[in-house]
Length: 257
Image (cartoon, rainbow, N blue to C red):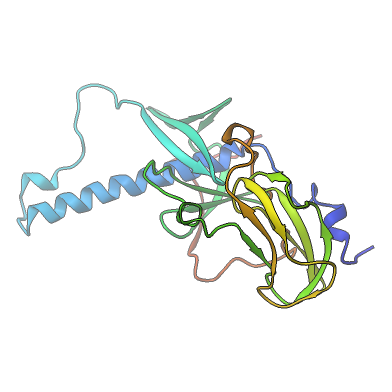
């Protein structure tokens, strides 16, 4: 039956539970990120040329008598660190990921450009977010101590609470479910910590009403598990502001058997 409990009963089928790495999607995005980097190098060389039509600074082809060296690419895949390695051969590029080797043109992937250098790879109905890993990135909310407040996303009713005051939680752990607009909205922990206070009971909630608060500490990073995606409406269309391009990544196109 289709009711407000449908998503909760079918979380695995709807992709609301952690899934294994989609190597084909990550490989496509990795090659796209490397292509962006190469374009940026050429554009920077053009700026250095300062309008000279025959400036040697315009030559940015990295000429070498030896084969092109392999490239290590640190990635952030759906919030998790993943190491990729790109090698170039006569037939094209090969992307190596933990437990996977993906040849260029082996799969057809749809790519959509996201925010802040992120690419969204769409493969077999699943979306994977891929960006270059930035070792200097800082979680400002966690650093400032303001990321521990869990609030209702809209007017609704608290129908399930999975934690109590004093419980240790990890980032992405399910804390509560709020029913609003005929849908169930899962609220997750924004960071590792300990539930310091439960501020709401089973009652109607106003928009942005505080449900719980977490303090730093709790589970160690080694015990952290992947975040749980929030359920979304089936058939939801992607935002129009994201330019999409469907193409087999790389120079050659062939579908996997």
